[in-house]
Length: 394
Image 1: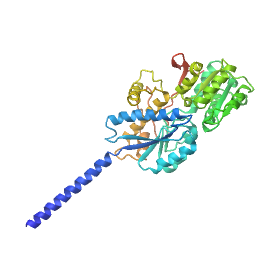
Image 2 (image 1 turned 180 degrees about the vertical axis):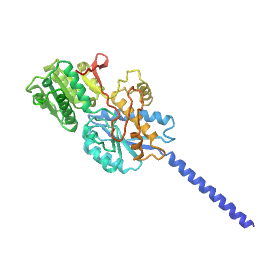
Image 3 (image 1 turned 90 degrees about the vertical axis):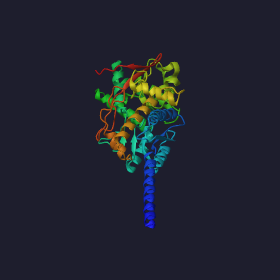
Image 4 (image 1 turned 30 degrees about the horizontal axis):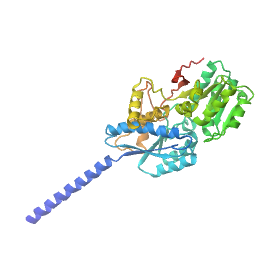
C-alpha cells in the first residue's frame, strides 16, 4: 500500500512539474519580443533619411513598450545600413528574410532600393510596409499582397506641384526638371509629365531636363541642360536628395533669380532648408505628413515621444513619417490576433478601417487598397520655417 501511495505521489509530482514546465515555456514564448527590420541609409550622403525614419519608428515603439508592449511583448526595430545603395539593400533584405524572428520590414528608404527589395518581399512572403518612397512600382493595380504603403504617391505630389505652378501663371513649357538618374528620378519625371497631360499639354520636348547620378554632387551637366534648354524655365521641379538639390538651387538662382524651385517630399525638407540657409526662402516642397507645429493629437504625442528618446534631436517631416508608419503598424499588430506572424500582420493591417491617428485624416486599407493616405500638404520655406500653401484647382 505504501508503494502504491509513493507511486501515486511521484506521478502527481511529475505531472505538476510537467504542467509548470509548459506553463513556463508558454510564458516565455508569449513574452518574446516582436522584431521588425528596416534597411535605410544610416551613413553616407543620404543618411538624414534613414536615421530620421528609424528615429520616428523607435519613438513610437518606445511609447508602446513603456505601456506594456503588445500583450506583454516588446517591440524591437533591427536597423541595417544600406547607404542608399541598392546592392546593400538587397543583402539586408535577404538577412531579414532568413531571420525567422523578423515578422516584417518597415520604413525602408528610397525607390532604387525598393526596386530590388520588392521582388524579394513578394517571393519570400514578407511584408514591406511604409517605405519612404512614393514610386508607382510599390503601387501596382491590383496591389502586391506583401507591399503596403502609408504615404501619398509621387504622382499625387507632382500633380499638386503642377497645379500650383500653373496657378502662378507659369506655362507648362516653362517648367524644367532636375532629376536623379535612377528609378526615383524617372518616377517623379514621368508623374509630372502625366500631370501636365491632364492639363492638355503634350509637347513636353520643350521642357528641359537635367539628369545627375545618385549619391554625387557632380551636377554641372545637369545645370547646363536646364539653362540651355529650348525655353528659359520659370520653374524647376526637382527629384533628388538634399545636397545636390541645394547645390543646384544656389547655382541656378544666380542665373534665374525669380525661378520657383519645387521639390517632392523625398528631398528631406529640413536637411534642404539647413543646407540652403537664407537662400532657401521661397523653395516649395510637398509633404505627405502634416506640419508638426499644428495643434494635433498626433503631433503632440510625436514631439513628446521624440523628446523622450532623443532630447537633442530636432523634429522633422521624415521622423514624423516614421512615427506615423509605426503607429499604423502597431494598430495592425493589434488586429493580427494572438498568433502574430508574417501573414497575420498583413491581414491585420488590411483590416484597418477609418483609423484615427490624430491628424484629421482617417487611414484605411483593404485587399484592393494598399495605400493608407492620399493627402499631400504643400509648404514653402519662409522667414521662420515652413509655411503651408493653399492649392485651388482651376
